[in-house]
Length: 246
Image (cartoon, rainbow, N blue to C red; front, side, top):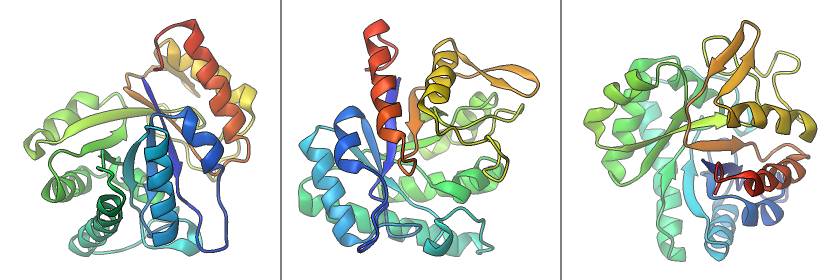
């Protein structure tokens, strides 16, 4: 299982995350594309930082809503939303080319990610939009009990899929994420994160209705938590206990 983190979420003079410290510890960087966060300077810096540390760079597009950090679902016609997401990915692709970096994956952000995990039509349209830009990109989505159904639904896009689990989020009994509005749904204490990851190492998460099996290839740690660096360090320390993360 590979470790991924949301990065490049600063904007102008406003700083978010600990990208310089976290980047050497991860495998994939999900880089904001100017929708929920990020700007051309930040995108270029983050791409260069990923290249410096041998980290695979991916696009992290979301609703065009910096005010709410892309965490509120917007009522946008699907055709317009698809073009917005393609434009965001395209901007990062252009900067990546200028930096000599090849984009590896696409992972939608925040409310858009949650929306696609609940809307079969939307997840198909987004995957098709990504494939139209570059069929060699990996499309990241959440590992749920319906994994095989997603694989079937997106098979015709030709994209490689990567299913992820979350190191710092609580799960609903249906396998999706609890809303951030629910107290305790976001794990910020590194002790809690590590305990949750230990469960994931055993192939499950704890929900309000008991254990739920989770099968994933990559593990996400959100970059906007002040304790992210300590959590990532401690997750990486688990590598010494086996080959679960590499």
